[in-house]
Image (cartoon, rainbow, N blue to C red):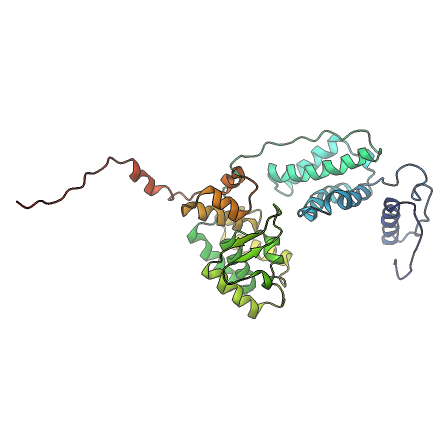
Length: 336
């Protein structure tokens, strides 16, 4: 349906239909006549896939739709097609374009090397698809940038959480405050919290299903998590999910408002929700939980990932020095 009129042309392939649809929508947006299917779009001569958007759509369907992180992978590639232009022919993309895009990510979006590498990896998958479709002969060179091995140093120490919670409550964002408390005490990813249902909450566990690793985790709730989930039944508007009524884009904006107001280290947080996952892993480490159990709790793929999360506060090692002091002999009083 375009401007109230139904169009029903027939195509030889789905890719050809996708191409024509994007061209028709663009023409309608620009006030131009709706194009008629051509020999190319009917799939009778060569590939019907030409533009960046064509290959983004078909790559999303063929490569990313069946993955847990499929939407995120597609979004990473979408940054590029939005920046370069959706109707840009993919055969016109050069290495210079890719370096310019990296510069845009670094200077305009303040992305670090790890984030840039993930976005460029998604673009590379899309370009490989173009090679397989014989639209281009090779993928332009894509540089992989060095990432810091220790990961982000940012997390909330125990006394740094209260100012955040107070600010959220002060603004009347109690539902967001509940979500923050849940994320800190469970280490759940934001999408895992969002899709959590009341059926996944038992007396002993919060069940996080189909996690990034494909596993299901049974997380024992803290007293605060129990209280938050009970309050969600009262305050929440979704009868099936504790946090189903929250709009994540709105929540991100609210968190950034609070981070800006608090200043200091808070303004450095580039991932408003992920900081709470860092916080959970770091607190577990500071309380002496071993790396293997932290790995299982956080749903990490291996121990090297866990080690990037196990950041300690400056005071966490204060009592370790006692182990290096000379042993003091036990003295007892003997009465003669």
